[in-house]
Image (cartoon, rainbow, N blue to C red):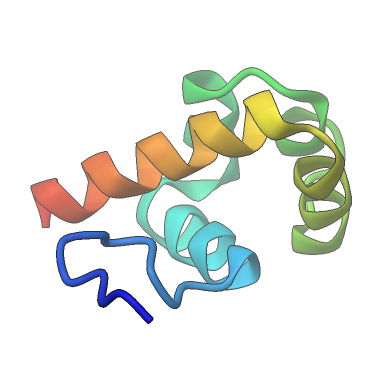
Length: 73
C-alpha cells in the first residue's frame, strides 16, 4: 500500500472531521461557510453524516474547509 504522508485527510473519519470543524467554527459559522441545510437547520453530527455520505459535492466542501482549518492552526 502506498503511504499518504502529505494527505491530511488520510485516516480521518468523517465524524471526527465534523466534530473538529464544529469545535473550531461552531455550527452557525460552519453554516455560513458551507450553506447546507444540515448545518443551518437543527444541526447535528448525525444528520450531517447522513447528508455528507450521500452528497459528494458537499463532502468535498467540508473536506476542503477542514484542510484550510488545519493550515490555520
